[in-house]
Image (cartoon, rainbow, N blue to C red; front, top):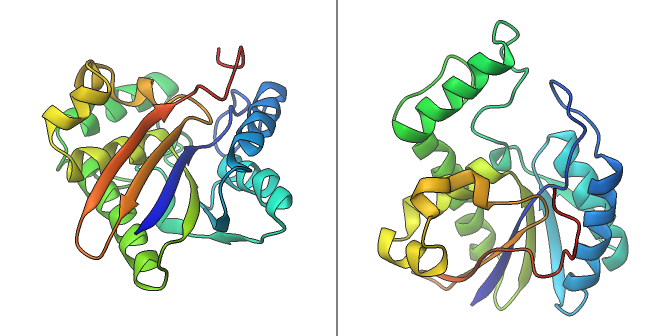
Length: 202
């Protein structure tokens, strides 16, 4: 059995494109790192976006590990990737991809495809590991996409009764979702926990 800690990146600066972490985001990472120290983390993977890489690098220093960049952990769509879209247009496009999970925007992936990318990452890592604890620093949307692909509505609502109404809003910055994986099955152990982040969520 392998243990995967799906961590949404820490809070970023409110800028278009690929911004750095905010001051609050850096504090969030420190608390998240302190929490993770109780686990024997073997490896740390990150999406290629700066906010995720910076989050992963802070965590990796504590474990004396190098961050492995995995583009398949990137978000389904990212504000700024399509320069023609205003922020309001981006939000409308995001909502459309959330509601119509097979819809593929001009730039980026469908919700379903993004979820399958994350699934493939976990399955490929699992083939090379056994009884390992692995951190994946990624994004709120793709975490939700993966969960919707893998787990039933009933199970997700047991963890969060409003999961399908709130979706990505439930995946706060530096929240931790724990998924276990054996040879054939996925098991959800924790969903978007922020118990380790006192007073650091805005």
